[in-house]
Length: 317
Image (cartoon, rainbow, N blue to C red):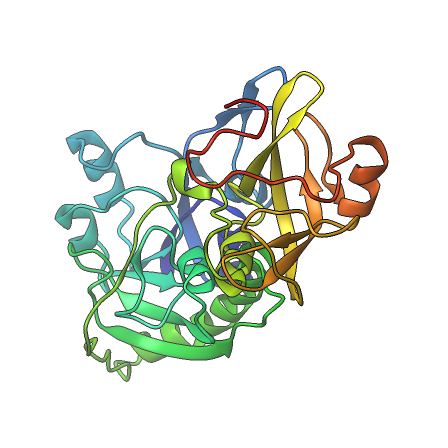
């Protein structure tokens, strides 16, 4: 089949590899433009662009697909299908209508649960025990199209957004050969979504702050759902004022106290009920490290009370 592939982050790379390995012709790869990155803020291509260029594929990164010229260029590709995996741009109707078999998307949830921008993060943050990967026919509505193929998977109590995303990326890549073969022979029967939808809205910087007044299970899910990006965080007073510390991994442990209280010398923190132990952390300008390693050079004494929400750090009131 003659295909356009549309994706940007690491999550999309296994799908691109699977399409190439299956022998499909990739007419063009669409991804987000290179973004400033690193201390020098030089432009860095996305993971999909890097992989596509390594495979010798044509890469396009229009700022919008609503532009008539961009739509004309897409139509002229004369596609059998367009395959979408975390692309990052809205596809208007002229784009959706252009390929012979339409545009297909791999989505990281069991639709209609968690339609939208952050389904993997939201599933973990909500404490869901199960999620899935689905191949769906795209429509103009937000993740409203019928589902062609689906595979369920459990969410482990130790899953982060990164580990779950990696598993889902490879599961999704494995579904594409079956999905495209079914479509090509006319045997694919997409099933309409059933049930009340929930929406996985984009993660905002404000909600990344840890609220220690919540139950420990919710705090732990919040931390893991935002790891590694944008990273759940708390503030503590250091020698030069408040220091924002990201938490990349935590676990549920026994313990109790006023919310935000440091209960011991291994960063067990009391929550609204129960406690969490912070396992992997990151200070500004530093590499991620174990909590044990951080505490060797940055003490957070037992009895320190970490603020929640908009409450200022102790010593800053």
